[in-house]
Image (tube, rainbow, N blue to C red; front, side, top):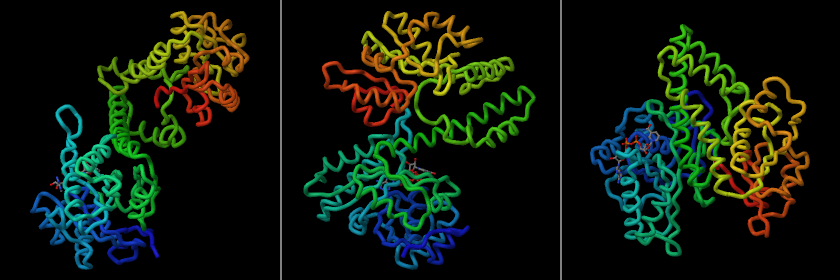
Amino acid sequence: MTNIITGDDPVSDLLAGRVQSAASSRIAVFGLGYVGTVTAACFAGLGHNVIGIDTNDDKVAQFARGDSPVLEPGVEELLASGLEQGRVAATSNIDDAVAGSDLALVCVGTPSLANGNIDLRYILAVAADIAGALRRLDKSTYTIVIRSTVLPGSADKVRSVLIDNGIAPPSHDVHVVVNPEFLREGQGVEDFLRPPLILVGADDDTAGSQVLDLYDGIVADRQLAPTRVAELVKYANNSWHAVKVTFANEIGVVAKALDVDGVEVMRLLCSDEKLNISSAYMRPGFAWGGSCLPKDVRAVNFAAKSADVVVPMLSSLLPSNGIHTSRLIDLLLELDRNRIGFVGLAFKPGTDDLRESAMVEVVERMNGKGFLCRIHDQELIPDELVGGNLAFVQSELPHLGQLMDDDLEQMVAESDVLVVSKGSDRVNAVLAAAGRGPDSANPLAVVDLVGLPDNVRSAVSYYGVAW
Ligand SMILES: NC(=O)c1ccc[n+]([C@@H]2O[C@H](COP(=O)([O-])OP(=O)(O)OC[C@H]3O[C@@H](n4cnc5c(N)ncnc54)[C@H](O)[C@@H]3O)[C@@H](O)[C@H]2O)c1
């Protein structure tokens, strides 16, 4: 039976044997640095048999004695206990490591090259080493788990190294899986045993589940994803953390220049868990707009500039949004089909507010270039527009009334390209029934800005901008 970590002190739970994995696996950990040592110690604590291997003999010797090669609270106790129970060993010999394991956790470094790319040489060297050992040992079944941080496509490169070394079906059943590490140095054991997420990227469900099962005993959200998605998640996470710190610092310096307590501003910002600290606004889609965001982003940049405060991230927001709008225009120009139908014109669903809607700019630009544009927006009645909304339309899209089409089905039938920025069940039903897939005589190119369901995607000639 598997017990799970429930107490406040997970290391004590492991040391006391209160948490044990249901099935013990034989794991080789390649690279005894921060990630490898923490990983090895914690998996040993969960009841697995772990053999550590490193090209640095001093680290191997240290590990073999139960001395942690890195300073991380809890690691040494877990290693010592693992040694005592015969579940921890170390070697410099690749054949010993592969012979004594069913899967390898690759935790070697992926440092930056001068151009910012990652240096995969250590990962690929491990792959070649493992391939050689598998051949020498005549071992046909094995799983290689990349725990290091690697860009999408890296697992494929490892697979290529295996194939180049003769490790491929039908003689070999060897899988390459990614399992990114989310630990923070200094609290690596705590983060390993109480992870924010256990993520495994695998193109083979059995190999993916084999790796998820290693974490038996740990309570956490477990997600299986395609390999390339899992590879990129780690970079998205770390970019997001960098964005958060940079944002807080930029708000802090603007606040300081305005004689405002920036720490209090950020505390209050974080207290809103509905819109601010939440998944709101965190899905790729189309450019933002409306009556508030552009105006307010301009104002905060004005305040910073007036105070001589340089805020590169805040000042990049409007240009970045403009570039995103241009991506849609470029795609429509590339498709170069004459009749374009727009489903949705207001800046977001549930409103008829057109002020600074990026879609208004797109329609205006395509119209100006001679494309025949039609617009269907259920929530928009041009005759009922008033105030600033009316003034914006009159200056940006004076012929709006003539472009509007109440009849969605007819507009779809008479369009070569459809841009969907407002989705609905009705839109889905009309597109799914249109019978204009990529192989039809009259395919309908649909540019999806909202995330249309699969049955609609497959029923048309489908394009995305941010996916
Ligand atoms: N340090 C962190 O907090 C952290 C957190 C999450 C992810 N990561 C990622 O994990 C990876 C490892 O990071 P780290 O900080 O543990 O690195 P590290 O430099 O501390 O350790 C890497 C180890 O790999 C060993 N090594 C190199 N080539 C080898 C080979 N062919 N065979 C066996 N061992 C070999 C090195 O001797 C070294 O001991 C990186 O991709 C890093 O980006 C690090």
